[in-house]
Image (cartoon, rainbow, N blue to C red; front, top):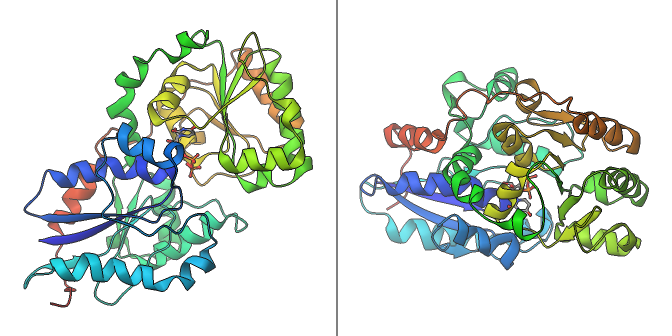
Length: 375
Ligand code: UDP
């Protein structure tokens, strides 16, 4: 029996973890999975609604770290200790083997008696101003088994001298979730209720500090979006940190309270199925999200990424994504090209086929794990 701690903290983690939990539930004799929520995202719209939409079990433990910095989490070591005490030891039986688990770009608490796995290993933006990039690097160094989504990630890890036997090219768990929920999402009536026509609107997600923390940069983006929204309504489920910055900078006038007939329409953050429904029906998606670049690639919907780099270049090489930076003119130029029908339909990357979680769980089930949890 393998004790597995599945760690989630923020919105994209829930979406990626759901199929892994589902796959582990198929092997009750092999795994003792436990779900730990760090509590980074905690409210209804950023956390709870995803557990409901994706049919995820309630977390076994919530560390309630909130939106504190990495340092404040580290100062909070007793909580991390609780993970081990509450979850590993009471369940360890003679012969049980403890195994730490890691997802995405969170931090991993390496202990002698546990190993760690990183889902989405090897992604690199090479942008060290992003805390996610630092977390990704550290996590890959600390983990024993690295599950990758594409050939770029494999190459990055090999270039960093990672032993090839630690790398497993499994595909993309976020796409597992998308493919499982696509028909359900298509069937929602949100566009109809909001008076939107398929292909007649754009969606927008925006939350990276590089776009919203500097008022001049943020204003330039909003100017571009205003120009685009004169042509086509833009639906903008606004991230809490973006709303906070917009309020702080006095940008309220940029936003409209309806999508009719045009305008930059802000809504609360949407549920998973709702955003998927909008994205599959959108003419284009404008984003600085990591996951949305991947989802639009699989949906075949043009994606304009407002960043100077991406840790997911496969979405540009194979998919529908273009990384355009955050200057007003570049955003407008690329959005205009999409509106003129110049976007490429793209293709789906290798192994983004809905079976990544199953591959991960199969690999874990067959591992010969040497280190034991203390009895
Ligand atoms: N998402 C959502 N509702 C929203 C905005 C995003 O369900 O209002 C989903 C989106 O489809 C994707 C994930 O959240 O699956 C991406 O999360 P986010 O952009 O917060 O994180 P990142 O991928 O950039 O780490």
